[in-house]
Length: 120
Image (cartoon, rainbow, N blue to C red; front, top):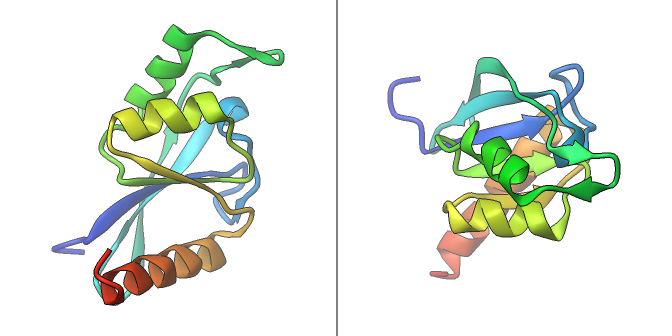
């Protein structure tokens, strides 16, 4: 893909479904999406999970976000407020969007196009 419009990190155990809590994810499927909504899988990026048995260390959470700084969006089955805040601070929008990878990307792309149409 020559000119991707945006990059997405998807919390997935099998690279087919968005089925992981952001803080428990051991890897993210990284994809580039073009203007037409077509996507290309770039890599499976391994990270250290940031959830420490129900509580979160801010520094650990920041290290987790650092691992996906090149992404514009994160899709996860669940994501806590602290992670959403840290991602937003780095310009990354996060969405709880469990389901298949293609469905999640299609929904995200539709949402973004709707925002464009509304000039938001």
